[in-house]
Length: 396
Image (cartoon, rainbow, N blue to C red; front, side):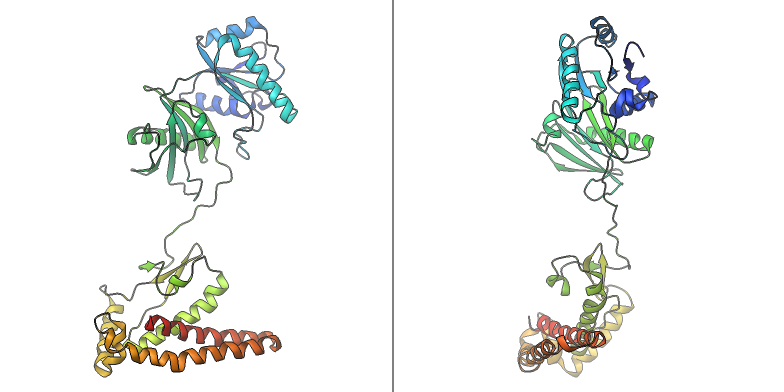
């Protein structure tokens, strides 16, 4: 430390109040061997003597600079506070002192605090962007999302442009969006690999800002991803094949509640499969469905695939067709015209009136029932609804 100036590499071990969270994070990156533009920190109460500042700038080799805030809680594991404070890019050496004062003044005005300020060598990037080492939407830690825009990243970070985007997962790379045409598959992989190294070093998913100058990949910031949702799995809880929009799935546009799924849906589905068994001898093994992250998926494990379920169904269906082929005819597109009228007549004459009567009768009883009576009523209606749904599915 010299007269209130601390080099970035020294900031890794310096008191946080003197260097701020952003500088400490950059210092840790430098100390760990990552390529970070060199720079120094101006401590909150340092006097900006021209000769001292010039000496620090000369040590960086002159040129142009980035003057950046470094609040005490910036880039901290518990709250990254990205974008909260002021940073100014592409500053010439003669203007650095004024820009430091500007960042300090903005911090005092908005937050009533003294502010460490970082001065770094300015990178002139071909493209720049952000890499998330976990999917910020799904929480999946097996994917790295890399975005980029042409030149400096400020348009991307401010939301003015969406930028190019790649999703890197294991050895796979998928382009999600191409609006700038600057992020190739090769560069996206390289950025993702470097970002994952940062995440491994800090032992947490990271939001990494990077810049590519055409020859060199630079890291200009790294902070923990805060507010990351819990990672979810879309693997079914039972082995097999499942379809989202079949049977009851066609009628369920939203995630289901546990009570609806375990009580009403399960009861109605069993009644549906009882009807299918009566019509054509189809026997579907349970579970008839699975719930994955709240969403309903219908089981297709009765389909013609090798196994006991299909063999048993084939025998049952063959027996039913031989016994009453008109009953089974509506179940198959090739023969539907021979049997649909029978199903429609049954629906109009029996199933529809019975269902309407059950609902009307329940409406008259519901206010006078005990809790146990309400449970019985729901059971009765669930059975009726399952029969009614099975009939609608058949007729339709």
